[in-house]
Length: 247
Ligand code: SAM
Image 1 (cartoon, rainbow, N blue to C red):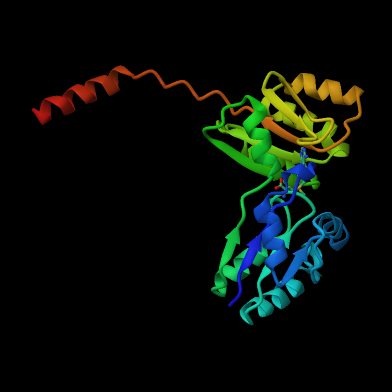
Image 2 (image 1 turned 90 degrees about the horizontal axis):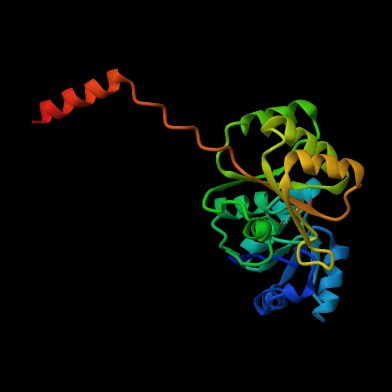
């Protein structure tokens, strides 16, 4: 069968197109794009002409099946989204799973991804982190999601749209407390790139007064690790007994 290539695209700076991305799109038999108009601009920039099919959230079942059939018949496909890495808070996840189930090889080309770009610059601990994507719009699901993160010690990464940012910052401050550090990474790789390292309380106040513009990744510090519980006398005695028995 053919191969599915996951091709990341710039998240705001055309200079981030790599030779391998361009070559992969040039060599693929066809391109599956989230929004063909957006991808057409990229293809024009690269002076490439390629057959395109659309693959987005609401047609992913039908379109996924027809892409799979073409792959099984030997064609190769480059999957791209509007910006960043396919399958990361973007269409692609299901197509990759479908390919995996059907023995179609998947090659993931490394490239721009907002969450990694933000984490690296955040100044927050990077050793262990959890990517939380977008919070749900639905109040109940949103609350459940936030509750599940209450004791989270790893650095937490969220995506958010600007018009929802003020409400999200309020919810984050209510869940983790206003003193919790946050790095707001805005317009990464673009002209107005900005990284604001502050607290949830201050950020919530600021964006309440100043309507946010542009794209944001939120990098929230994890909870302080719980203090080791002081060993009780009972524990101490049990250890002494155990050591004695070992001889
Ligand atoms: N697949 C993409 C990736 O690899 O990062 C993510 C797509 S998701 C639909 C879009 C979200 O990513 C935005 O709402 C924002 O949170 C984040 N994002 C994308 N580009 C960004 C940029 N240049 N600066 C900051 N955040 C960005």
